[in-house]
Image (cartoon, rainbow, N blue to C red; front, side):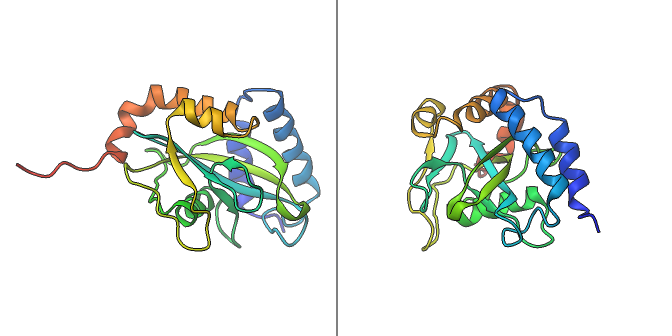
Length: 194
């Protein structure tokens, strides 16, 4: 039986205009893998599986963390739980890894980028990267997660992130410049009365 999450995911993926050859290749590979994977969201079913991550943006810039297993600076994200929708997984993983209570943009989840890359344990991640709006709060990752989680302005993020992530961060920066004024109300602290 076909996983009901696939149709919504593929609709979102097919709405993307790839920003470079890497993303175009990643989208093509995602389609190919989905043609053969019986359980595409299950990390135990196959070394190749779909993951979800959060491209967090807010008034302080964007959030990156030092991946505990890979030793590189990346966006928060991870595996999708059984029955969980990819946008919900991106939000949950971001909360678990950063302690930040993030939200999807007004109008619902926004898939911004797709990337296929090696993960830990010889896995290949077909990563769906969603825009998440972050509050003006310091990250507070729980014990057991990387404690190196930072808000970075975009220039600092471009310098720290892996080369493969930088194009997605540049796209996120451009989107924030356009949508930021409307999104700020969701991420700025509410002002208290007089």
